[in-house]
Structure formats: C-alpha cells, structure tokens
Image (cartoon, rainbow, N blue to C red; front, top):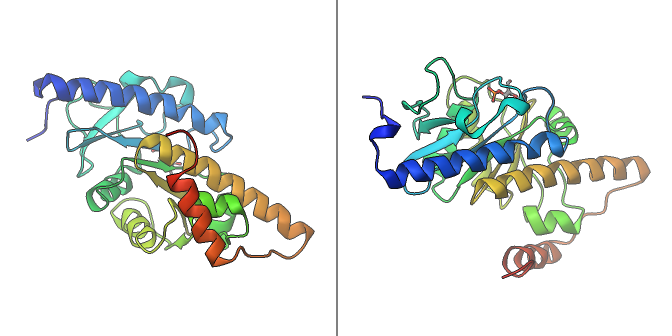
Length: 234
Ligand SMILES: O=C(CO)[C@@H](O)[C@H](O)COP(=O)(O)O
C-alpha cells in the first residue's frame, strides 16, 4: 500500500518539508558551480527519523526546482503520495540513490553530476590519482572508478556501494557515466561533487605541464585525519 504523507506524524511531515527545502536549495549549487548542463544531475537527502528520502523530479529545469516540486520516496525508491502531481516522476537515478541509502546507513545525502573533468576520467576508466593535498583532505586517496552500469535497475547503485566500501573517498567515477558522491548529509555530498570536479580539473591541467608526483601515503593519512577531524570550526 502506498504511504500518504498527510497521514504520517506531524514530526515526519515537518522533517519532510525541511528536507524538501534543503534539497531544493542544494540543487541550485550544481549549476552555480558549473557541475551540470540543462537538467543533468540530481541531489537527494534522507529524511531524518523516517525511512524516506527526497529527490528531484526527473527532467525538470533547475530554475523550476522549488521545494514543493521535490519528490518523496521510500528507501525502495517508490514515490509516496507526497502532494505533488501523480504524473511527476522522481529522478531517473532514484533507484541508485535508494540502493545507496539501503546499503550505507551512514549516508545522508547522494549527488550525481556529469561534471566535465570528473566525467572525462570516467570516460577513460582512470581513477583520479592522489597528487594534491586537497585530495588527501577530502578523498583520503585516489578517487576510484566504478563499474559500467546501465540506468534502470540496481546496477548503478550496487556499483557505487561496492566501490565506495573499498575506499575512503566520498566520490566514485562510474565508468562512461560520471561522478556519484555521498555525504553524511546532502550538503556534504554536494561539497564532494564540487571538490571532485575541482581536483579532476587540476590534475588534467597538471598532466599538460609535466609528470604527476603522488603524495606519500603517510602524508595522505595525516592530511585526511586532520581535515576530517580538526579542520574548520568546532
Ligand atoms: O545520467 C542521467 C541520464 O543518463 C541522469 O543522471 C540525468 O543526468 C539526470 O536525470 P534526472 O535526475 O533529471 O532524471
């Protein structure tokens, strides 16, 4: 039986509304950071306190992505009766996002883009090598490549999870497709999407200048530990 949002507790309805507003605002970060063209890409966030997540509607222009247009789904990826028109379908990547939420309970947000430089590494099946201190900070090593998977079932989600489980990276370059990123919340996943494109662009530029020099593993580990546990305001 399909869940009906208006029949859920007021706390959950309030959490859904806050998550819709957050996800709508975060979608604006993708074009603002030049990570997407047209309607490519998507952001989702788990709804705190509920087995639900919020994701953008498929194929809708970024300037039309209001909070009320955000689609609410179960962790199986099924749209609930959420107040949006029945015809409004969730993102074509909903199954992938849902698979990540079901298999990685620590993940609170998922982002997918086709950002140019990260997608170029995905096109040639090359991990982004850890040659920058910023990569040690955010990715804890190289950004891995995931398997080629066709959209439409759990294969993309399975490839994301199986690859990220073997890495500290919050980003995976799905072969011939593009980056998917995760975070403890949706803001963290958007940050990883911004940073994976930045480091991909820098590494591609560096390869035009000379030979890449990897950061030593001991330094990667200390950079990662500092950035994840000390950097910023606490
Ligand atoms: O990669 C694809 C399509 O191949 C998708 O990720 C699109 O880039 C965005 O799809 P919607 O979220 O608008 O359905």
